[in-house]
Length: 511
Image 1: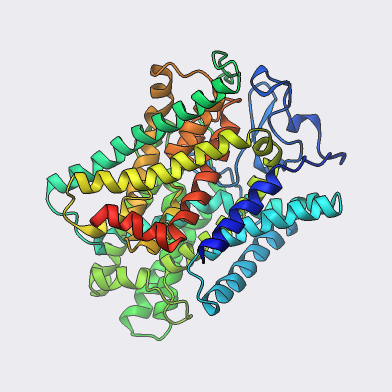
Image 2 (image 1 turned 120 degrees about the vertical axis):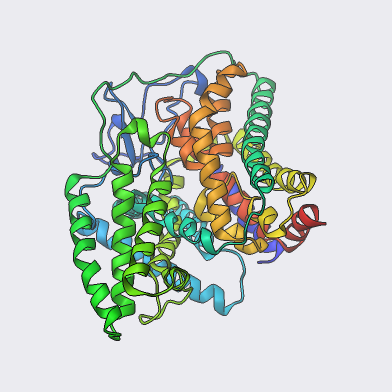
C-alpha cells in the first residue's frame, strides 16, 4: 500500500469519526446501553446507545459497559456452545469468513502488502458509517445483523492465538539466559514507557482543554458471586470427548499409513488445542491470574504432540511442522493453519466494536488520536531503539519484539511485515498483556493518575486486550481502554505498512 493510500485511509476514518452520531429509536436499544451523564464527559453518555447485548459486560448494579469486540475477558468469552447458537450468529460468522477469503485473494492479486484483515475491518466500519449517513437506519441494520457473528468469533478469538506460541520450539533460539533477560526487560521496560508516555500526554492535553482531571472515575462493586466460568461444562465435555475419540483414530490411520492420516491428525490437534484452552480458562480465577489459558493451552498442546510422537514414532519436529504447515490444501492443512486463519475474520469483526463507539471516539477525537500516535509511533520506534541499545544478538528477536503493545492478531501481522517471527512476537505480546493486567492499574494509581480517560487510554495503549479486560470494573475508564487498543493496532499496522516508515523502523532496530 502506498503512502498516499494509507494517508487517505486514515484521513477518511478521521473525517467519518467527526460526523454526528445517528439517533437510534429501535425498541431494542434501551437506556441500559448508556449510563447516566458523567462529569468526565461533559454531561453526555460515554457509550453510544447502539450496542449489541452480546457485546456488553453486565455489572452488579445492573448497569452495562460495552465490551470491545476485540477485548475478550482474560479467560475467554462466555460461551455455552462450540457452534454459533443462532442462525444470525452463524450467518454473521460465515460472512466474515467469506469476506476475509475474498479480500485476501484480492490483495494477493493486486500485490498489496497491507494486512487485508485490517483493511476489511476499517472498510466495514467506514461502510456502516456511510450507510447510516446516507440512509439512516441502514448502518444500524448491518450492525445488528453482524453483531452476533462478531460476538461468536470474539468468544473464541483467544484460542486462535495458541498456534503462534505452539510454534516456539521451531522459532530462532533466544540464546543465553542473558538474551532472554534482555527480552523480558523489553517487555517490562516497554510497558512502563508506553503506559507513562500515553498517560501523561493525554493528561497534559486534557488539562490544556480545561478538563478537571482530579475527579476519579466510577468503579463497579465486586460481585461476590463466586468464580464464573467463561466456558460451559458442556463445551468442555464435548471437546474432551471429541479429542478422546479422534486420538485412537489418528494413531490407527498414522500407523497403518492410511491416506486419511493427515486430515484426521489435523482434526485431532485442532480439537485438543481448543479443549486445552477451554480447560485452562475454566481453572480457578486465582490460578488463571498467574497462568494464562494461552500458556496452559500451549503447554498441553505441545505435550499432546509429544505423546503423539512417542505413540506413532514420528519425529516431534515433523508433527509440529505439520501442525502449522503454511498450506491451506485439504491434504496438507494443519490445525494451527485453521486457527490462525480464523484470526482474519475475527479482526474484521473489530468493525462492530468501532461502530458501537463511534460517538465516543468523535467526542474525544483529539485525545484518542494523540494516544494512538504516541502509543503506536512511540512504541515502535522507542522499542526499536531500546532493543538496539540492549544489543540483543539475534536481529529476528529484535524485530519480533517491536509490536509488543499491539493486540496479538495485528502484532503478528506487523511482525510478518517487518520480517520477524510470529511465535516470538506472540510470546512477547502475551507476556506484556499478562504483566499489564497484573500491575497496570496499580502503577497508574501510584503515579497519581485518577482521571478515567487518561487511565483508560494509557492501559489500552500499553497492555492490549488483557490490560483492557483488567479495567472492566472501572466503568468510566474501560470504554477508552478498548478504544485505545483498537486505534493503537490500526495506527501501528498502517505505520509499519508504509515503506519509508518500515525502513526507518528497521534502520533504528538493526542499523
